[in-house]
Image 1 (cartoon, rainbow, N blue to C red):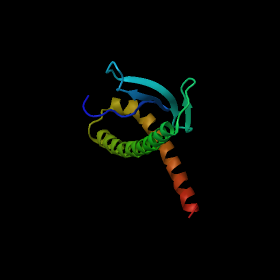
Image 2 (image 1 turned 45 degrees about the horizontal axis):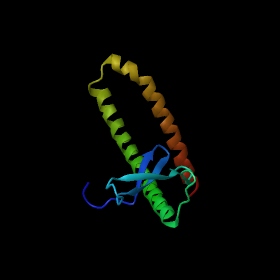
Image 3 (image 1 turned 60 degrees about the vertical axis):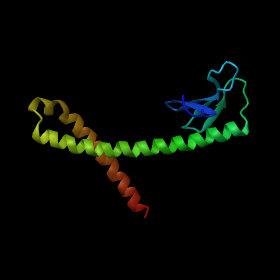
Image 4 (image 1 turned 180 degrees about the horizontal axis):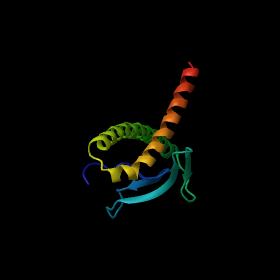
Length: 133
């Protein structure tokens, strides 16, 4: 590896991460990773690993990572929605120009129900926003 290693490593998992402290300055010149905590992004919980006590530097780094991770996940969510709009447009073009009758038969009901559900939610949310103005 080139350059200095960070002091902490976050192994991402679905709800957060396992937090490791990195030690590369040991007598064996090997990278050692010691798990120090488990983080849950959804509820903000930080659990020390085993009987470990987290110091102020540990907590500050974990909280910094959590803030950055939440921002990244929020950005990915909205990007996924923009991609969905693109996919809907591509699907409309496919249905109009290339889809066979059998293909349309296979997907039409599922698409119509999903679009109806989405439309219902969007209309209700829009009405709620307008009522709140």
